[in-house]
Image 1 (cartoon, rainbow, N blue to C red):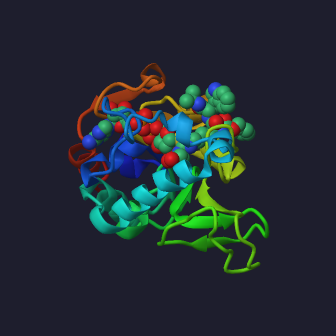
Image 2 (image 1 turned 90 degrees about the vertical axis):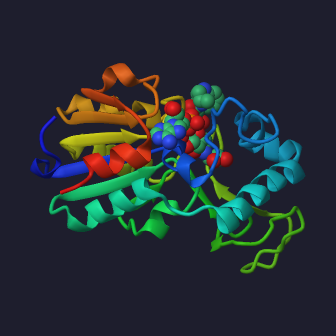
Length: 234
Ligand code: BV8
């Protein structure tokens, strides 16, 4: 690994681990994410079809927790500051649906799995910033139809947002850094191999070695609020 400022094109991927110290549970905490529900049982289109009220409750609860309790932490802040100072090309891709990166000041940001504070009308295809509850009766502010509103979240089995742009940037970068992700979920878990295929250096900062740990040139274990400010300073 070289000094960070010697790279010209950096892509960073974050996962639930970067928001853990802001009090948001990760997906694979041993006590599970929500009342023992497997995420795949509440975060799929089939689950929404089968039991929309349960899925709405799952996201309403998380949205309120994000709004009322969670604040960006030192890792979010360090990435935002680095983005501002770094002279090269930079992109932050997050798997997280929280808005802690934006609130810390990140701008060059893609939410590949959607956003908890956004709602989507599947009737008129409009999306809206959304802070309130969503229910099966919620009316669309644009087309007025009821019963078509869902969280603007990419569920298992759905195609992540801006995946073509992300893959292009991965092939162009000379450094790929993965922070706070277990490497369980694809296509994000395969990004390191995309980046390596064109010779990028690859760095993993995580509490424990991820499932894809062997693909990284350098892998450092530790807490995001310790490691990210340490690595992302110019
Ligand atoms: C796709 C929104 C095709 C939901 C999320 C069978 C049927 C259908 C699909 C599949 C299948 N088998 C496999 C698949 C693909 C599937 C998949 O990967 N499944 C897994 C379970 C095997 N993927 C998909 O379906 C994706 N779509 O494949 O479409 C396609 C693809 C490309 C091009 C064309 C077509 C869509 C997946 C999106 C699912 N939605 N989020 C919601 O949030 O409610 S995923 C969800 O998991 C979150 O976004 C989360 O971020 C993400 C990944 O988890 P992590 O972020 O890694 O979190 P985790 O808890 O696992 O790990 C946290 C890590 O942090 C740990 O390692 C821990 O040690 C560390 N940590 C903890 N504390 C700290 C820390 N590190 C540092 N500091 C700390 N303090």
